[in-house]
Image: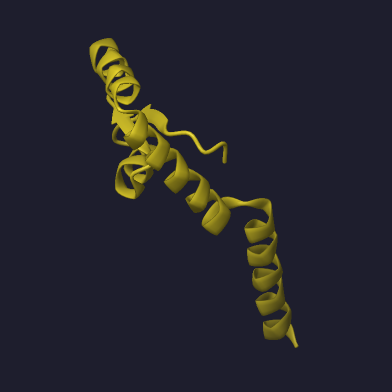
Length: 85
């Protein structure tokens, strides 16, 4: 939502999403060395960091924003109502 890249735990849904969508980096839990490498990687690449942030914001708008979640809820409730009638 904030338009910043994320660093998250590898091997999780969030880690898969970050890596798959190109919005951040996934690091094994407890691996301090890999975390430091991830931070250094992002610090050394401002353009890539900016692009990850832009993709993260676009993904939020497209899939996770409050407006999108409300739309999905209305759609789901609407389909339930149609089945009951």
